[in-house]
Amino acid sequence: MGFGKFQFNFKTEEDLEAVVKQQPFHFDYWMLSLARWQPKQSKLFPSEIMFWIRITGVPLEFRTVPTFESIGRAMGRMIAVDLDQNRVQVVIDAFKELCFETNVDFKGGEFYDGKEVAVSLRYEKLFGYCKLCASLCHKDELCPLQLKNSKRSQKRRRETRDGNGG
Image 1 (cartoon, rainbow, N blue to C red):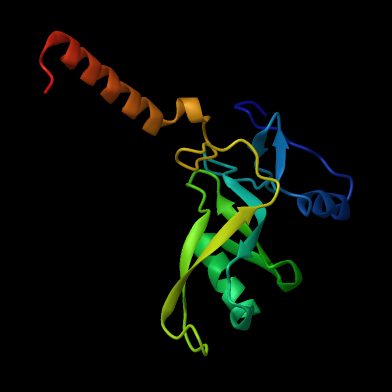
Image 2: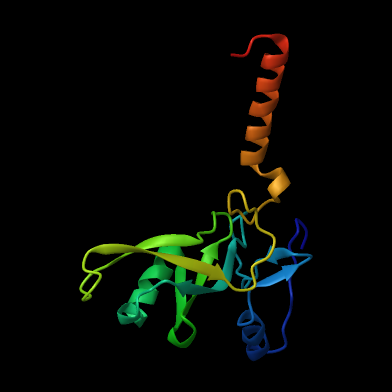
């Protein structure tokens, strides 16, 4: 299709759904977004990737579907909850930063009434993200934060060398 986009044709709806359920996909250690084709798409299409995200740190008394759904909805569009594996399936916007830790306010529990607890989020099948800013859109060495810090360091070195620095 051009512009880094491909179209796959499936013989049956069941074949398509079987492939979609296996998301996320990656090629050469970079994430791929897979979405059903629609006649009218934005120029950013497709920008959504579905992940299973394992959640650790939730107190045992709060390991319920509503708790996991709440955490999942805060990350993107909720698809499913798997309490046996302590994970949620969520569709996230690939243009936004990934979240690897968040605080959850657990209320109503015997030991956690009104207390925030940090929970960790581990994305299954995650490849090729920037470890500096958690973006899926570029490598570490091309990170705007890295480039900005590098330019500041070069400016300081020049100022120091020229005798203008403090």
